Length: 114
Length: 145
Image (cartoon, rainbow over the protein chains, first blue to last red):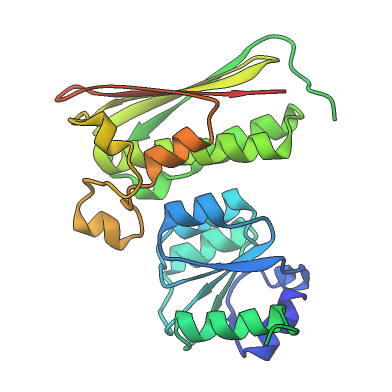
Protein backbone atom coordinates (compact mmCIF):
# COMPACT_ATOMS: atom_id res chain seq x y z
CA UNK A 1 0.00 0.00 0.00
CA UNK A 2 1.21 3.48 -0.82
CA UNK A 3 1.67 5.85 2.11
CA UNK A 4 -0.76 8.23 0.38
CA UNK A 5 -3.59 5.69 0.55
CA UNK A 6 -2.93 5.12 4.23
CA UNK A 7 -2.88 8.86 4.95
CA UNK A 8 -6.19 9.31 3.13
CA UNK A 9 -7.88 6.31 4.73
CA UNK A 10 -6.99 7.48 8.24
CA UNK A 11 -7.25 11.25 7.62
CA UNK A 12 -3.68 11.78 8.77
CA UNK A 13 -2.11 15.17 8.31
CA UNK A 14 1.20 14.99 6.44
CA UNK A 15 3.45 17.75 7.75
CA UNK A 16 6.71 17.15 5.91
CA UNK A 17 8.19 15.61 2.77
CA UNK A 18 4.99 15.05 0.82
CA UNK A 19 6.94 13.36 -2.01
CA UNK A 20 7.30 10.46 0.40
CA UNK A 21 3.55 9.80 0.13
CA UNK A 22 4.24 7.95 -3.11
CA UNK A 23 6.40 5.41 -1.29
CA UNK A 24 5.28 1.88 -0.58
CA UNK A 25 4.67 1.02 3.08
CA UNK A 26 6.28 -2.30 4.04
CA UNK A 27 4.75 -2.41 7.50
CA UNK A 28 4.58 -0.43 10.71
CA UNK A 29 6.21 -0.40 14.10
CA UNK A 30 4.77 1.14 17.25
CA UNK A 31 7.09 2.11 20.09
CA UNK A 32 8.16 5.09 22.15
CA UNK A 33 11.54 3.59 23.01
CA UNK A 34 14.10 4.73 20.47
CA UNK A 35 16.50 1.82 20.97
CA UNK A 36 13.61 -0.56 20.47
CA UNK A 37 12.82 1.09 17.15
CA UNK A 38 16.47 0.94 16.19
CA UNK A 39 16.51 -2.76 16.96
CA UNK A 40 13.20 -3.76 15.40
CA UNK A 41 11.83 -1.34 12.80
CA UNK A 42 12.35 -2.40 9.21
CA UNK A 43 13.21 -0.68 5.96
CA UNK A 44 10.16 1.04 4.47
CA UNK A 45 8.18 0.88 7.71
CA UNK A 46 6.17 3.69 9.20
CA UNK A 47 6.69 4.38 12.90
CA UNK A 48 3.91 5.15 15.36
CA UNK A 49 5.03 7.14 18.40
CA UNK A 50 4.24 9.95 20.81
CA UNK A 51 7.85 11.13 20.89
CA UNK A 52 8.29 14.48 19.15
CA UNK A 53 11.91 15.43 19.80
CA UNK A 54 14.71 15.77 17.29
CA UNK A 55 16.20 12.29 17.75
CA UNK A 56 13.19 10.58 16.16
CA UNK A 57 14.26 11.93 12.78
CA UNK A 58 17.79 10.55 13.12
CA UNK A 59 16.50 7.15 14.22
CA UNK A 60 14.00 7.01 11.35
CA UNK A 61 16.57 8.09 8.82
CA UNK A 62 19.13 5.54 10.02
CA UNK A 63 16.62 2.70 9.90
CA UNK A 64 15.12 3.53 6.51
CA UNK A 65 11.77 4.31 8.15
CA UNK A 66 9.83 6.33 5.56
CA UNK A 67 7.38 8.05 7.86
CA UNK A 68 6.61 8.86 11.47
CA UNK A 69 3.05 9.19 12.75
CA UNK A 70 2.79 11.29 15.89
CA UNK A 71 -0.25 10.24 17.89
CA UNK A 72 -2.57 11.96 20.33
CA UNK A 73 -2.59 15.28 18.49
CA UNK A 74 0.79 16.23 19.89
CA UNK A 75 2.46 19.38 18.58
CA UNK A 76 5.76 18.88 16.79
CA UNK A 77 8.56 21.42 17.33
CA UNK A 78 9.62 23.43 14.26
CA UNK A 79 13.22 22.20 14.36
CA UNK A 80 11.97 18.62 14.16
CA UNK A 81 9.81 19.37 11.12
CA UNK A 82 12.70 21.16 9.44
CA UNK A 83 15.07 18.25 10.07
CA UNK A 84 12.49 15.73 8.84
CA UNK A 85 12.09 17.70 5.60
CA UNK A 86 15.86 17.68 5.11
CA UNK A 87 16.11 13.97 5.83
CA UNK A 88 13.14 13.19 3.55
CA UNK A 89 11.02 11.67 6.31
CA UNK A 90 7.26 12.14 6.06
CA UNK A 91 6.01 13.23 9.47
CA UNK A 92 2.28 12.85 9.99
CA UNK A 93 -0.06 13.63 12.84
CA UNK A 94 -3.33 12.21 14.08
CA UNK A 95 -5.61 12.84 17.03
CA UNK A 96 -5.95 9.07 17.46
CA UNK A 97 -3.97 7.35 20.19
CA UNK A 98 -1.37 4.67 19.47
CA UNK A 99 -3.56 1.62 20.14
CA UNK A 100 -6.40 2.79 17.95
CA UNK A 101 -4.14 3.96 15.15
CA UNK A 102 -2.06 0.76 15.18
CA UNK A 103 -5.23 -1.32 15.02
CA UNK A 104 -6.52 0.55 12.01
CA UNK A 105 -3.19 0.43 10.21
CA UNK A 106 -2.91 -3.28 10.90
CA UNK A 107 -6.30 -3.79 9.30
CA UNK A 108 -5.41 -1.71 6.26
CA UNK A 109 -2.14 -3.55 5.72
CA UNK A 110 -3.63 -6.99 6.40
CA UNK A 111 -7.11 -6.85 4.83
CA UNK A 112 -7.55 -10.62 4.98
CA UNK A 113 -6.91 -10.87 8.69
CA UNK A 114 -10.07 -11.31 10.69
CA UNK B 1 29.04 -3.37 -6.13
CA UNK B 2 32.46 -4.77 -5.15
CA UNK B 3 34.14 -3.53 -2.00
CA UNK B 4 36.11 -0.43 -2.90
CA UNK B 5 38.65 -0.51 -0.07
CA UNK B 6 42.38 -0.88 -0.59
CA UNK B 7 44.15 1.12 2.10
CA UNK B 8 42.74 1.37 5.61
CA UNK B 9 40.41 4.33 6.10
CA UNK B 10 40.24 6.14 9.40
CA UNK B 11 38.16 8.90 10.85
CA UNK B 12 36.86 10.29 14.08
CA UNK B 13 34.07 12.34 15.56
CA UNK B 14 33.99 14.35 18.74
CA UNK B 15 30.92 13.80 20.89
CA UNK B 16 29.71 16.29 23.45
CA UNK B 17 27.78 15.18 26.52
CA UNK B 18 24.21 16.50 26.68
CA UNK B 19 24.14 17.54 23.04
CA UNK B 20 21.08 15.57 21.98
CA UNK B 21 20.72 17.59 18.78
CA UNK B 22 23.99 16.09 17.57
CA UNK B 23 22.83 12.50 18.14
CA UNK B 24 23.08 10.35 15.04
CA UNK B 25 25.50 12.59 13.16
CA UNK B 26 28.47 10.26 13.50
CA UNK B 27 26.43 7.21 12.55
CA UNK B 28 24.90 8.99 9.57
CA UNK B 29 28.31 10.10 8.31
CA UNK B 30 29.69 6.59 8.77
CA UNK B 31 26.72 5.12 6.96
CA UNK B 32 27.34 7.41 3.97
CA UNK B 33 31.02 6.50 3.97
CA UNK B 34 30.39 2.73 4.10
CA UNK B 35 27.79 3.02 1.40
CA UNK B 36 30.25 4.83 -0.90
CA UNK B 37 32.74 2.04 -0.25
CA UNK B 38 30.26 -0.54 -1.47
CA UNK B 39 29.74 -2.28 1.86
CA UNK B 40 26.71 -4.58 2.07
CA UNK B 41 23.48 -2.84 3.21
CA UNK B 42 22.90 -5.21 6.12
CA UNK B 43 26.42 -4.67 7.45
CA UNK B 44 26.01 -0.91 7.10
CA UNK B 45 22.81 -1.09 9.09
CA UNK B 46 24.50 -3.06 11.86
CA UNK B 47 27.38 -0.58 11.98
CA UNK B 48 24.98 2.35 12.02
CA UNK B 49 22.88 0.97 14.88
CA UNK B 50 25.95 0.09 16.94
CA UNK B 51 27.42 3.54 16.31
CA UNK B 52 24.20 5.39 17.08
CA UNK B 53 23.80 3.59 20.40
CA UNK B 54 27.41 4.33 21.29
CA UNK B 55 26.90 8.00 20.42
CA UNK B 56 23.81 8.09 22.62
CA UNK B 57 25.65 6.67 25.59
CA UNK B 58 28.28 9.40 25.41
CA UNK B 59 25.63 12.09 24.97
CA UNK B 60 23.51 10.77 27.84
CA UNK B 61 26.16 9.90 30.41
CA UNK B 62 29.53 11.46 29.64
CA UNK B 63 31.03 14.94 29.51
CA UNK B 64 32.58 14.22 26.14
CA UNK B 65 34.03 11.44 24.04
CA UNK B 66 35.63 10.40 20.80
CA UNK B 67 34.36 7.99 18.25
CA UNK B 68 37.05 6.55 15.97
CA UNK B 69 36.54 4.21 13.08
CA UNK B 70 38.98 2.13 11.12
CA UNK B 71 37.91 0.45 7.91
CA UNK B 72 39.94 -2.29 6.20
CA UNK B 73 38.96 -4.70 3.41
CA UNK B 74 38.10 -7.21 6.17
CA UNK B 75 36.21 -5.28 8.77
CA UNK B 76 35.22 -2.04 10.39
CA UNK B 77 36.35 -1.28 13.92
CA UNK B 78 34.47 1.36 15.89
CA UNK B 79 36.05 2.56 19.09
CA UNK B 80 34.31 4.95 21.43
CA UNK B 81 36.15 6.45 24.36
CA UNK B 82 34.45 8.75 26.79
CA UNK B 83 35.20 10.92 29.75
CA UNK B 84 32.24 9.82 31.76
CA UNK B 85 31.29 8.43 35.14
CA UNK B 86 32.29 4.88 34.22
CA UNK B 87 30.19 1.79 34.77
CA UNK B 88 30.20 0.19 38.21
CA UNK B 89 28.84 -3.19 37.22
CA UNK B 90 29.44 -4.00 33.56
CA UNK B 91 27.68 -7.36 33.77
CA UNK B 92 24.53 -5.66 34.99
CA UNK B 93 24.83 -2.87 32.41
CA UNK B 94 24.94 -5.49 29.66
CA UNK B 95 21.58 -6.92 30.75
CA UNK B 96 18.67 -5.89 28.59
CA UNK B 97 16.38 -3.55 30.51
CA UNK B 98 18.94 -2.40 33.06
CA UNK B 99 19.62 1.33 32.94
CA UNK B 100 20.87 4.07 35.21
CA UNK B 101 19.49 6.84 33.00
CA UNK B 102 17.68 9.67 34.77
CA UNK B 103 13.95 10.12 34.38
CA UNK B 104 14.13 13.00 31.90
CA UNK B 105 16.26 10.89 29.55
CA UNK B 106 13.74 8.04 29.79
CA UNK B 107 10.96 10.45 28.90
CA UNK B 108 12.73 11.06 25.60
CA UNK B 109 12.51 7.34 24.92
CA UNK B 110 16.15 6.64 25.67
CA UNK B 111 17.54 4.84 28.70
CA UNK B 112 15.51 1.67 28.23
CA UNK B 113 18.51 -0.51 28.95
CA UNK B 114 18.84 -1.57 25.33
CA UNK B 115 21.87 0.44 24.21
CA UNK B 116 24.75 -1.82 25.18
CA UNK B 117 22.85 -5.02 24.26
CA UNK B 118 22.03 -3.48 20.85
CA UNK B 119 25.70 -2.65 20.34
CA UNK B 120 26.76 -6.17 21.23
CA UNK B 121 24.07 -7.77 19.06
CA UNK B 122 25.14 -5.78 16.02
CA UNK B 123 28.89 -6.44 16.36
CA UNK B 124 30.91 -9.55 15.70
CA UNK B 125 33.35 -8.62 18.45
CA UNK B 126 32.37 -6.41 21.35
CA UNK B 127 34.71 -5.24 24.08
CA UNK B 128 33.96 -2.88 26.93
CA UNK B 129 36.27 -1.46 29.54
CA UNK B 130 35.31 0.99 32.20
CA UNK B 131 36.89 2.73 35.15
CA UNK B 132 34.55 4.40 37.59
CA UNK B 133 35.28 8.11 37.73
CA UNK B 134 37.35 8.07 34.55
CA UNK B 135 35.35 6.76 31.65
CA UNK B 136 34.32 3.93 29.40
CA UNK B 137 35.79 2.51 26.21
CA UNK B 138 33.82 0.35 23.83
CA UNK B 139 35.33 -1.40 20.83
CA UNK B 140 33.15 -3.04 18.24
CA UNK B 141 34.20 -4.95 15.16
CA UNK B 142 31.94 -5.85 12.28
CA UNK B 143 33.49 -8.30 9.83
CA UNK B 144 32.98 -8.09 6.09
CA UNK B 145 32.33 -11.53 4.66
